[in-house]
Length: 77
Image (cartoon, rainbow, N blue to C red; front, side, top):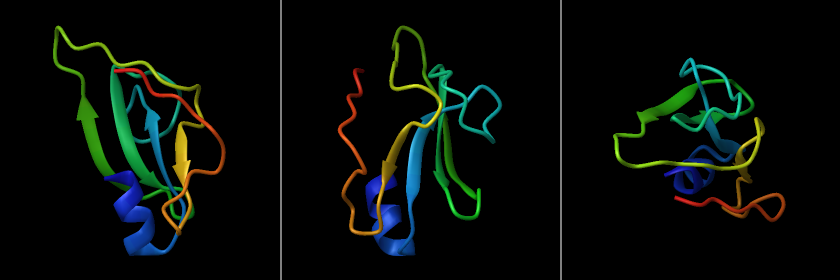
């Protein structure tokens, strides 16, 4: 979803861990898809037990408007 939103909005969009559902802080029990230019939260999700999600630190995975990621990142679910 983050990739398709980056393309649709023609701006960078991040998939990142978020404890409060509003900011990227690296807490992957909950994660958000956010437009990085405006800070608009596009989607907010919470992992349901027994699922465990881990990912990169606070910056998350950022998709460019082209749909490509800015650098190599690994997400393990």
